[in-house]
Image (cartoon, rainbow, N blue to C red; front, side):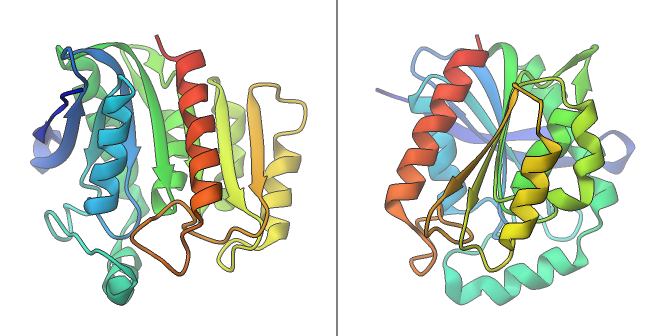
Length: 239
């Protein structure tokens, strides 16, 4: 299977423009998926995840969410985690909404995108994927399906859950030092009575269990199970 990769330039209106890594499936068309980065930026791991989505038939678009601070910020591996923490410490979440909306609109407008759009994010991006599901619309149509992996700030935005109208899947490790189990329970309680919202735990998995570039945190068994569930979620709800 041959996929096509490269960078798109996304307009942010009066603020300028920013880059987004794009991976397009064999055949050149498919449903879209917004992919939101970890604190390491658009790095090898994020590009690999976008490429895996393209191999599964989706047009994956990964926006550079740190562009207002440093364009194409990229760090790989745990040895550079302090740089990543410093970057997220400078990030203003007020920038997230406009940049999510701009990327969503760009993806919908691409000839390669057949119409429906999903969102998936990891860590910092897990929170952004949840926010996208709650808030982002293009021509009156929101996100069609969303997946949040261990969103670090999700609990601070649980009031947005009432605004989510698409099927939503949360992945959490139950041994996450950054997201205590009681925080996961808060999300589970908020989702009670919502058949379109599912919160899944992975025993023994910690934070960033899906990041193969972070060997001390990566858990192959949990990562592959969560990925298979993510693909099933998108296959069910994106057309």
